[in-house]
Length: 276
Length: 341
Image (cartoon, rainbow over all chains, first blue to last red):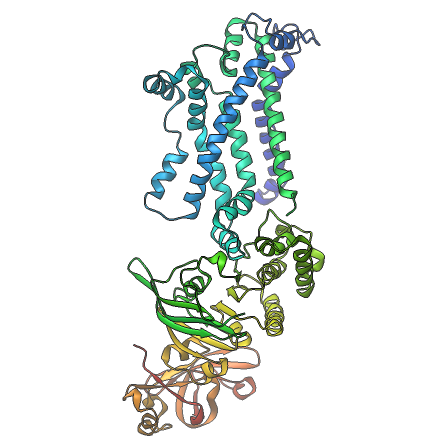
């Protein structure tokens, strides 16, 4: 008579089943991204799959700004958004990293509140955008408002990523070791603590930059004239031009994210092997 | 190297007194151990000497220099932590040269110094490795090399072998002991492991509740504990009244030797100082544990006192739990100790 043996059933089918579920999930999630990128090289998309490969017309429209979706090229829009996002990341590095360090390293009055405010995205982009327009009407027409808004909106990601790195090391002992060896506190912080939290800082920077460069809600409320941020540029392409033009614009953004991620990883690795 | 003096040092954290009027001298070239239970103030004492805590009251001196308020980076103290605290963004050699670099030693000299120390600690071939890739014992050696590279006035070791396996601990203990003796560097060794302290230190300070209970040589601490706490903390002791020993000790005579105890005396007897087989003490075996070469007996005397007795395993081959035994005690090995408050 056949008897049910849970252990053997699990051993035989458990791992393949988990692999199948994971694989299906990954395909399901990444398929829109892959199809978008592939379709940007297609002449048309009628039915379930794009056709008419291989053409660079969509990319040309987007890069040259000759498409009907926007009156500027994606290059200028991308550069503008990239610059704004870099500004936001720099502010987050200057403010978020010390906050993450303080919360991970020290016990002080109000520590838990600082932690909560630092890691909770308190205001949605649209609310923060309206508040900015009300509070700083003169600033809102400049890129400064976008930079500040991006840094505020994305700071929790920087704080969380860096704090996680700090918490994974013996922060107090490392700091005290460096100081006993003759390093002042600022030198300890800059040459020992920060490089040891490199992974978290790089991860936080990538997340913040990517999200800031693509931030739509805040940009939509605050942006008024001049070169549009990338998210506004993409929105214009999606709403006013063909999907394939929009796909090319989005693909440019994908490529940019990949390049920035690789660049930051290289910078991090170079810092790690730098000799004293 | 230096003589370190703590003069009535007190450290308070809010309403908690972690270190209470501690006075202690670590002589030039001496290895002094601080042992005590968790929370007794031994690590706080080390941190006060290193400069990571500032004393609420009292003075800390390195030789004749008052360093009470000197920041840690200006004290020239070598520090080795339990968790190694190596800099993972640097190689092993870079870790070791970090201290000399902070002191402005030129590149060639600090590299030579690092190589020499790494060779001395038998990890020369690991110089270009990342600390993360090393075993616990290797990391601890790197930590020690890094601390010694600055030629410290005092070396502070904070539970340096906790977390290592027993065999490695034994090897490192022997090597570290020889190294400290060769270098002659003034060393403070903080540990909760009394065996390590006994085997490595010239003197031992036993701390309890922020106070130092006794400072003496390892033999002095073990053979002549100052009070009930030390007798109980260092090794195993039976702390008993004379009634339990049933006439083996003349209580009045013993108290007359130490009048300061003022009738408040108790007697500390090590488990190995009993002789099982004959004598005036009658007891029932409550429990029996084989420890290898020795057997530990937990026995109860006629007045209900529980005693721990160690004897050769061949002497108790026929004994089982519940048997009644007789035993004697070497009266010359009994110590009068103050009752624990």
